[in-house]
Image 1 (tube, rainbow, N blue to C red):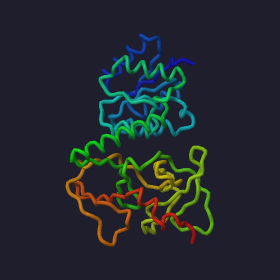
Image 2: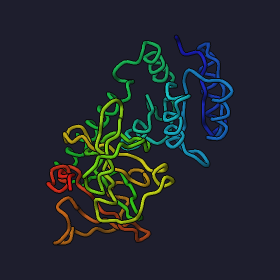
Image 3: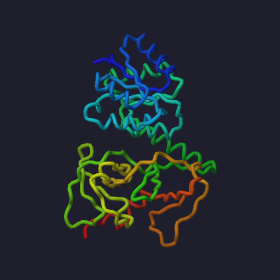
Length: 302
């Protein structure tokens, strides 16, 4: 069914007016919201065929709202196109990871927006499909990083996470899809840090408590688990596992830190550089490729 009803979420009245006029001229019905709370009210009133989502908004931002909507069974089938001034490649990757089906930078090009809507109307071409788009973005980002290194420029991008009060950096190119916490089937006679297996997108995946793997003994509660996320390994690493983390802290590049330290002599082989940000917080890099090949990680039985 062609897209007819569109919800536009943006805290800028100017942007709301511009997009509303643009869409109405194409014969679409438009409703608007200026924040996350209002957006969910609009969703409850009438389910749209498409959502256009800003990122920088007061309260819950567009990344968080996109994640919440795409994880809600009532609205998971509603495609979201992000329309934002955040134009970095890492922003695009992050948006797609939250479940967006498209990403447009402001000022919005009417032709580009119409092309994405047309693709959705046609059933969603590979460019618009979440998994394919994310793979394309990851490949493009990896190419840019490789080119920069070849020119002698030090460029890195990480997914920043927290687990048991500690802060970690996971290489973006080694990270896979992010999932909310789901029910895990326990497996007897396994390490305490191996929580069991979970059904993620129709496949069984081993779930590893990152904090527990690194020696934390902080007990898990239903509340902490409900707020946690599962980060799958990139498929290229060929390990069918996901890491449990307490909180996603966004993306980081080298420019987010003021100093760095090499790993200690007795550090695990998968520990990389420790980075320090301007507030003095320490972020430990974890090489997921090396971790995935570590015998202790692969030996889950007791």
